[in-house]
Image (cartoon, rainbow, N blue to C red):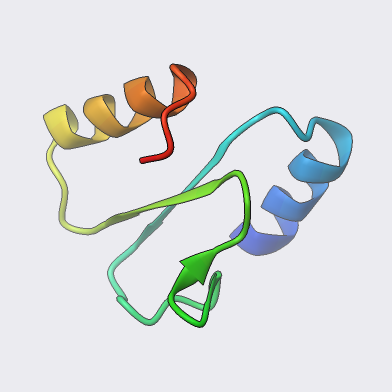
Length: 65
């Protein structure tokens, strides 16, 4: 199972759970016409622990980051 298949299953079972993809590629397959699917977020590599923590905190707080 790849990351996209896993996120689809999580969204099917628990649609309220946000999904964070990490990628080293800006033209990621999870992005459709420069937009992420609802409830999905993206952080590009390389990232620091502080950047990751900030992104996750905002997602958990319900921010559209």
